[in-house]
Image (tube, rainbow, N blue to C red; front, side, top):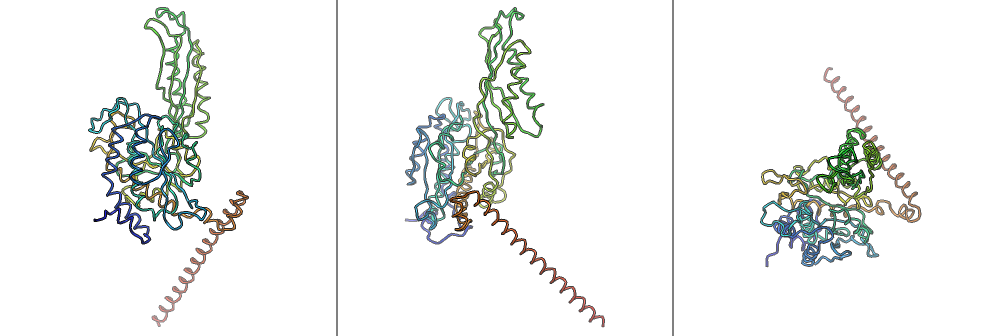
Length: 487
């Protein structure tokens, strides 16, 4: 029976060079691209809301069973799988992996009624994968198909988290609470993105997605007859003034160079058409990048809310201000590793560039604890109508990008695990010190790095000196040659 390309790669016994690793990733991704697209369409057709992803979890589990990849279900929905490397140095003598990376895919959908007209459109009324989490599931399953055929190239362990409840900001914290970050050295996630061109992946360092906060404001006026407004204090009018006044925080209180958004998404007030409302409430979201702006925002809003209401003879209170997610900030080293993975798998044309977004993502909870990167897998393609924003009822993606996302994740994981551990970089002396005195170990590492830089500088200086001496020697020889020719 003829073996597939993936099976041939799995059966190979020789150690693969770096270029051969990337070639193997491409070959396996090409073989499984129809599988990845099929999975995306299946999960798109059967979306489930946050913390209700029961069928989704079961269907993912079935795929992992078919791949012989073990997993656990630490929560009611979502699961955590483990892929063990079989490289000779993947595990220490005590059985612990030399390095461990966490790959995360979120799995929940949104309360949106789909209007794409796709043949695989949602069959669950009022529920849609309008943010691409169906793609995240499919890309991760594709990544696992690649990696399970290449375990000899995996120098450590991969922990894969299929996370529930990203859309309401709870899932990451719930999963982390179960211990998924224990023993993890780095984290990776990808987000399909409608503002990045299809075929490219953006993974720049620094802030990529915003601090996401939720708020509620309650307004208390005095109700009265709609024909006698002078007898009361109109809570709806006060609420409307607060909506406008809040925008002056962004336009007048914060630097124009500091991104920030205050959106009032709800305004509720009134009980009858001929009654001046006595109460009203507003609800909305705040998005920021800067730490200082994020910290100051509640007090800035509280001042505007209370004083605007007081000026109109009413009362208002910022009754709730909740930090839903902190900003997603890519670690510089992780971003560069991801960029190299993109270049290896997709070439220079695959390197995307994106300024970032004020949308939020709870992958930030992982990155607050371990270094890592969130990559934007571009899907914008006007030729097929893939231009609608995330959360749109018309949201479409270019399915040709899915296998590319799987490749980059697989390459990133293999590259990460192949890098030396801190213990290996330290050597036995510093490693021993680190066990009892981490601060001293950090100083020793700094001194070691400084010494290495000094050695490099000395080497460069010697090289430059030898080049200068050679230049002088060559110049003198040329001059003597000219003198003899003149004689």
